[in-house]
Structures are given as C-alpha cells and as structure tokens.
Length: 391
Image (tube, rainbow, N blue to C red):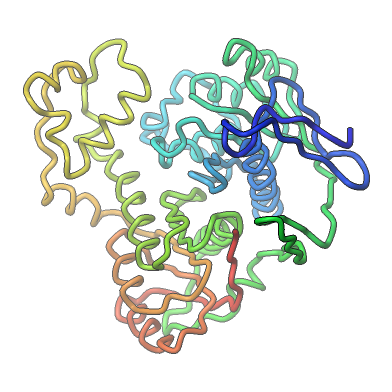
C-alpha cells in the first residue's frame, strides 16, 4: 500500500488528509480503526523511540505519546508492590511488555489521558488488558497475539486504532517536510545512543556510574531524541518519571520535568496511598483528584461539599513540609538534557528531585560553573557533545 487516507488532518476541522510513500509501500498496516494525522505522527515517533530503547537495553519497551512528544516511556523491569498499586495493575498478571507499558502510562497519568501507544514487541494479552482499561487513541506494534487483537478491537465500540509496523523498515537517508509551501530537507537522525557515545566523557570529580545509572542516562537521551525541544527528562529505575517538553527556557524544562517527577514520587507516599475514593469513581476523576490533592490547589478537592463526591473519608491536608520531607527521600534519579545547561540553576533544581547523575551535551560558556554546581552535590555528569533537538 503506497497511500493511506486519514480520518482528519492535524486539525479535525481540516479536510481529510493522506499519508503516502513516493517509492515503495508504507511500512504499516492498519489492522483496526482509522488513524488521524497526529495519530500517525505519534505512532512513527513512538515506534522509533521504543525500537531504540529495546536495542540499547535489550528489554521490552513502551511509550505513551501525546501531541508529538512522549508523556512517558519505559523498559520492562518488574514493578514493586507500590508501583503496581499506583499504576492499578493488580488484576493483571504482568509480562515484561506489560510492565513497560504500565510504567510508561503510569508516570504522568494526566498527560497520558488519550495517548497513542508504541510497543517494541508483539502486543500480548497482558498488555492489551492494561490498554483496555485506559482512555487511548491507538497503538502501534510489530505484531499482536490473537487474544490481544480481540481485546483491542473491542475498544471504542470497535473503532480503536490498531497499527502493525514492519520492524525491519529502514527510512530513507533524507527527510523532507513542508512549512508554508516551502520544502525543508535534512538527513534522518540515525544517531545510535549507547554508553560509548553518551557516557565516555565524565567531567565531574565523581566519575562512578552504576549499571543502573548508565541505563537510566541512556534512556533519558533516547526519550529526548523524540521529544519536542527544548526538553529535559528525569529517569528512575528504567522509566521516565518527568519530561519537560517544548519550553523556550531550559530551566523551565527542568522545573516542569522536576515537578512531574516530584508528583510521581508523591503518589507513592503513605498519605496518597491511603486515600479512600468513593465507589464507582471514574479513573480520570480519580487521577485528577490525586493530582490536585498533591498540588497547591488542594482545597479544590477538600472543600466542604466537594470532597464528599470524591472521597469516602475527608483526607488531611498534605502540607508543604510533609511533601518536602517525602520528596527528600527520592534519590538515584538520572537527568538528561537535549542541549547544554547554560546555568547552574538547572543542577540546583534537578538536585531537589533526587538527581545524582546527569548527561548533557556541554558547550556552554559557563560549563565551568555548571560542573562546579554538580561537584558541590557530588553528582556525576557526562558531556556527550550531541544536541538532540527535535521539531
């Protein structure tokens, strides 16, 4: 198939759009449903991300994409009991791929609402059962088991978008895109991110990286490769826990990613784990309530006449002091940046969210001040010399 008519363009008000190959057939088959323009942008970017994660780590990988940037991404490491609880997976016997998707979807559930999913491996029944429970636009994978396909085809009254991609497809070396009637051309980014290319130039006094540190840093860079710039990514235990995408200021990327990482960690606190929700509450309403409860606008869910619609028992306020104390317990977090940190304030903010290891291109006129900031906290920082801008 050389051409595919899409449900709509990047704006649903636009006329129907199409995607096509000038030479050869499209590398995808639409197994169910009908994708839109942004669905396919998310699918192709997400597939590249998970394929590279699998190649770099040897582990099954998944990502949850929204509006052409990942909301979450992860490899298939086993889940702790706490993560199983906050990711709501207790009713599914998890496989490595299901663990990867649970982590990718669970890191930032608010942002992942209505996501497009990419999977590195054949979608199995366990992963399909997790997808079944979530509000999602579609999924792309190299294959689907018969049981998984039956589950997915039943979503959205039979209209759930299921795409199969040829895992052996290699894109052309030159890429083109049009903006305002003008054609841009550049080489496809075939950069392979691995320990040698990313972590060989450690510039801090502390040069000790564990194997987990190395994996987390590599994951952060692969995620950044497919995240709208400027971007910063926090990673812990094989999963992105905070992604700051598309900000004009790099420190705003770091703050945004750090706040998301803090929220992920706060959701594991005893106060949040102990929340008692009313029976029958919708998943999106529950997720929103948790997000508000751990934020500064907590009275929006704790005010008289409101909490009764959400909780069986009115929760105590999660004070700033209590939140700060809990956040201080998070550690062994990695952070990557798609371009250099121009000031030490990025390091200062990252440290507050448990960051101990850093990878960034380097090349700022203030590199010495950034290195000093990292040394002040005994961090390990590598300069990889590569900018990963993505637009």
